[in-house]
Amino acid sequence: MINQALIQVKDLCKNFGDLQVLKGINEEIHKGEVVSIIGPSGSGKSTFLRCLNLLEEPTSGQVIFEGVDIAAKNLNIDKHRQKIGMVFQHFNVFPHLTVLENITITPTLEKGVSKAEATEMGMRLLKKVGLESKADEYPRKLSGGQKQRLAIVRAMAMEPDVMLFDEPTSALDPEMVKDVFGGNQRSGG
Ligand SMILES: Nc1ncnc2c1ncn2[C@@H]1O[C@H](COP(=O)(O)OP(=O)(O)OP(=O)(O)O)[C@@H](O)[C@H]1O
Image (cartoon, rainbow, N blue to C red; front, side, top):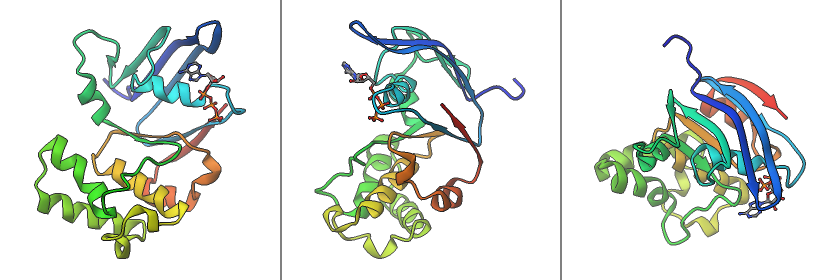
């Protein structure tokens, strides 16, 4: 299909008990777009992102990813999640693995990439974000911004179709985002 949206969100609602957090969201996101979701604390930004990879189950509505409804019974949710890189609010890097191992572990375990190939890709990604000299350090020795960059390249190592950042955009260095991802930027409230 020509110009099909990568992600289509249709009338998405999410309640936690009596609390209505998402009240009928409609949105389309296309390949190459960089979209920011802006809103007050507690307004549902994380909940929205988590609905996109079914970390939260929507109360109603649909999320269509690459033309497939992610709630479809026959959808392989693990395969779906592999296509979506997620950078969590507190970066969630593995403290017991080195910086390089943080990047190589998932592609080798989940995608069958060889250790040598994963290492080569890991070093390439670390170079891209200026962390190649930290490859053999443990994350506790990294600054907050460096941990963030590690979390980003770790997600990118799975070569996802989409990257979701569940963190304040103010914490993201716009130049770095542009450099690493390119793409068109768009903000949505
Ligand atoms: N698992 C849950 N159970 C019950 N309530 C929840 C749950 N997760 C989130 N909420 C509530 O849903 C609302 C939206 O939370 P969410 O984390 O999506 O907000 P946010 O916009 O990402 O906030 P912040 O900017 O502070 O990170 C909040 O009132 C929160 O307390």
